[in-house]
Image: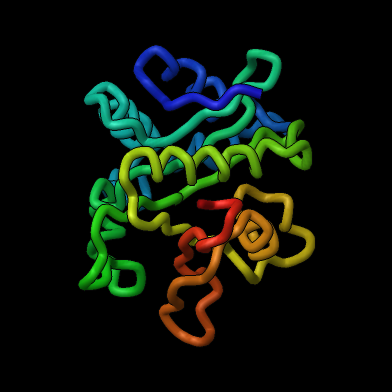
Amino acid sequence: MDIDVVTPDRWPDLVQLFERPGPRGGVPVPGHCWCMLWRDKLDTRADRKAGLKSVVDEGRSPGLIAYVDGQPAGWVAVAPREDHDRLQRSRNYGPEPDDDNVYAVTCLYVDRALRGTGVASALLDAAIDYARSAGATALEAFPKTDIAPHAQANRRAVEPKRTTAGWAAARRTSPEDSSPSATPAQEPSCA
């Protein structure tokens, strides 16, 4: 498996991953939102796709893409939190007063045929390394912790994967919050 930063020359691979038809012929979730939810409010799928392409073309990588046997296999959106205008303005997930150079993981997607093969874990490890190498002081993620058993194979990270990847909850917006902000734990696996 290879994992690379999304750059203009890798844009066609991201498009292929996001627009690859599913088992019933539909487009995967990232092909609808184009991971622009926290970046900008764009109304149409075409606008969101163009928005993400603009980010890539400007040289601001929006994340990492995984390849298995040379084919796009998965994606993790990881970038400075300040690149996500809507996240910055969020009452629940906005910055804390002492935050400095915090990165955010806002999406994790693995092609359905490759789920359960370690692609997601490899992408999370690569996201941690990528953020750390860019000087991030923390890496936030927003895993869904209350997923119904029949929907656990979807694209959202669940609490056990986050915990086993060496993550520790940094804050919750309320006791009932099912999507805690998380940062890498200070453990050898994340040092």
